Length: 460
Image 1 (cartoon, rainbow, N blue to C red):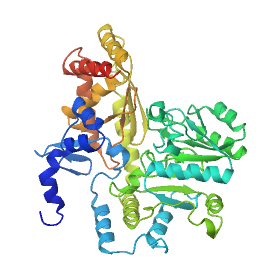
Image 2 (cartoon, rainbow, N blue to C red):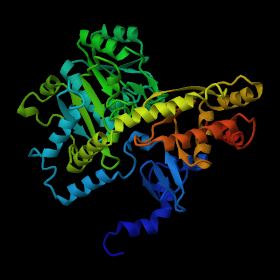
Image 3 (cartoon, rainbow, N blue to C red):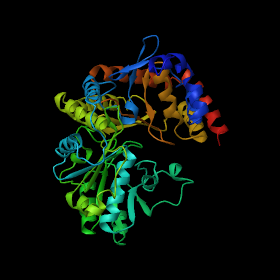
Image 4 (cartoon, rainbow, N blue to C red):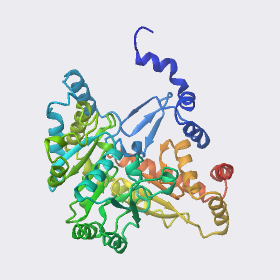
């Protein structure tokens, strides 16, 4: 090899991918993938599909945990990145004001007219960190209230408002915090009365379990917070940019105007890490109150030209291709067709969600034979049945999905926002076949279930 040739390197070493990861990165990831049969080798990707070496397609209903809102390798985003590289801009000088960040901020704020300014970072957790830091500074208060089962990231500040103990265990001490149940206004008000709450951070639709805030909750919470001089932080890292059928998920409810909004994931176009924290003018002016404080909060790679170009291209595609409307229409089609199966399958408990963020929840069956098998799985580890569904969807039907969270019998669908009726048909047909198998009382699914039980018991 002369110099660096990426194509040649991948040709020579690409087959070592699982060994390399096991030796040098998170060794549990390849072990987990081997166990559940997810150790596939994808050669390329386009739109809502992956392709293996034999040219077989795999439908992506996961979108990289929501990053791939436009699917993979959208030509407009690719062209924008080629253009910005070819332009050889004087990027990240730190002592100028390049145009791309201002242009992207302008476009983003156009979708939230009550907000005035933007801070650009690199990830969803960094957007949350920014919001927490700003809220604590401008209110002079230490404590942040969050929701049970909420997920806002895994860095220390964001972890402090993470509603899952499994992520928090062993990383204390964290920031002062208190959890309340999503929708519990009385609990929120009790915390606010103590006078030390800087902000309440909430996902309009929780990623874990795909649970939406009850109607009217965000507006009522906003009123309570402002009465007690605290801020409303809305985490739109996964729900934002059209995922739920509106540009922002908080816009499903009238008169909700958060003080700070966090976005990331889909803004990247799937290429360059980027996040944005949108906020009110007075908040930014209090944080950056003088020239001495001009760099009091910054990010080394924040607002880099490649990220800004990707973000601008994404917003342009969303407008030109009516992506938000497609998410609303296709999401309703998918949700309604799946909901129509609830009465047909006793293991299927509920289908819920907004736009193309859909949760499929399984529950205890009534018939004795199925109930005994369900009980066996639950005794070993809650969530194993959902995993039993996810695995054949991939192995037999070439559809990638995920269990919505640890110890949950919920599958979450967050496909690229560009899917249409063809993909809905494919998923519903595959899901129906898997449910038919699960209700047959035997077969490969329950054999795999026994394997999962053994694994769960061995890991205790």
